[in-house]
Image (cartoon, rainbow, N blue to C red; front, side):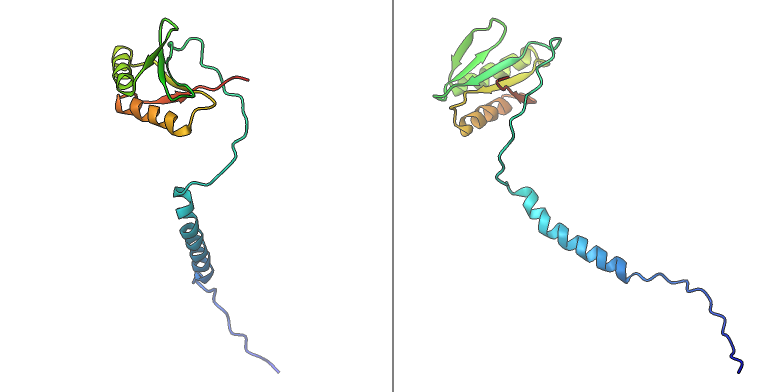
Length: 139
């Protein structure tokens, strides 16, 4: 009994069905996770030590919000001057125009409502401050 062996030629096609399955799964994952990236998620932030400002850096301009929502600015003379919101915007614009490379920092009291700190940051942005840092207590 002799059988004729047909010579099988190698198949030159790629089976793309598994690749399509993987792509559909990835598409579904991205469709589910994309809306979660734009919404806020409540998290409890860990306590961490912040790095100090370099000693060779320019002297920062510090805007402070106390527990009562009063704004203050501290610059060269280390005296905190109380300001109204309008005065804060004008003072920030003048200080940035005078010294555009000086870092601008926001210092909020522990008892300050978060919205007051954000309001101060919005005032500084409207005054033309390019970036704002947040001060922390090194304890």
